[in-house]
Picture 1 (cartoon, rainbow, N blue to C red):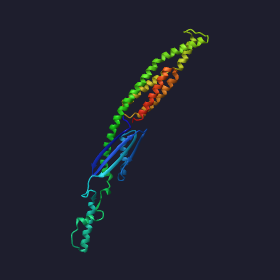
Picture 2 (tube, helix red, strand yellow; picture 1 turned 180 degrees about the horizontal axis):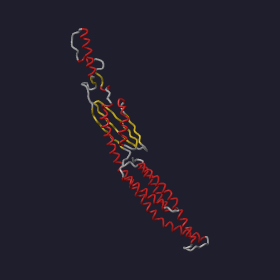
Picture 3 (cartoon, rainbow, N blue to C red; picture 1 turned 90 degrees about the vertical axis):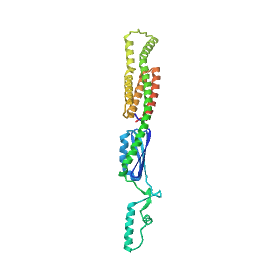
Length: 293
């Protein structure tokens, strides 16, 4: 189980270029991928998205990539285009021979020829040549981001398990309380009848029938059973290795609905207090599951 929050960096060097990748993720209901690339490498965006989607299933992922040349010229800030230098030399030799001029063609003259000497910043990387390095740097960044997401996810899982345990304890206490609620209703009904001047024996069929109707209207066994099933599903999802954030959010909504129905049907102050506490705990659970992949 992973959190949706994480960060990672990766680096790789090849073909005279240094590639640096950075990945950062935050919460989202689905998956969103934003990619920032140098213009010469824009053609690689679709491949980068595919790499991210193989690793991440939920969240907003911001990917940025930068490249810079690793080589340098003697001046430290320019490079020599060897192809342009050779072409310039051929042209100058042809001109010298055509005009029958004396002298040698110096390196200084070649370097002053247009296109031979240019700034390193003018160099543009070839996307296909650089892709293996870009992929390596990206995979490294995704791996480190995934490690951070897994570490935080483990803390979230531990916290959610504690909260599920609190809900289980509340549900058990409510189930234990049910027989006492039924007895209280029976006694309250008999007391009311006596106030009205119609005392009724304990084994009176009419009283038993009325109590049965009241018990049926306020029966919360079904809600308690469904809650216990949801708790088991929560534990199963939290113990798994697959993304389960959406599943847990759905289960939290269902548990909230069951507790709400249970509180309305029970009509007991002690049970109502447990229900209110449980609904507050469910709000915290939903806040936490919003951080899970």
